Length: 108
Image 1 (cartoon, rainbow, N blue to C red):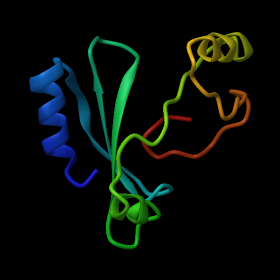
Image 2 (image 1 turned 180 degrees about the vertical axis):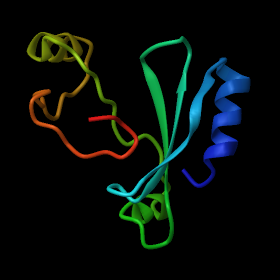
Image 3 (image 1 turned 135 degrees about the vertical axis):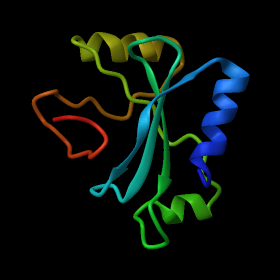
Image 4 (image 1 turned 30 degrees about the horizontal axis):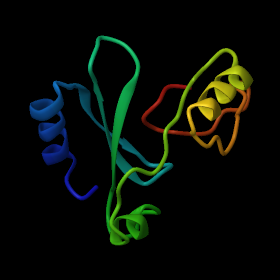
């Protein structure tokens, strides 16, 4: 997304989201990240923009951006994936919590 501040303001005004903290720089993903939520806890909407023209994400923005993926954290991944499939959703991968992927915007 080209302008996180404008997008966040639209989510707040149109859907009642609240901004969760300051925008975070994620050097691993070469991105700026802003979290929004409807409640005091999860789930979050994560707005992401490249941190500059050389960002790994710049090509996606040049193609028009948009929804990239949805992530769910569940203690029963297989059951959750089955529930998603029953609602005509496509689950492209299940990742164990034991296998961590670096992300500057998220702890751990």
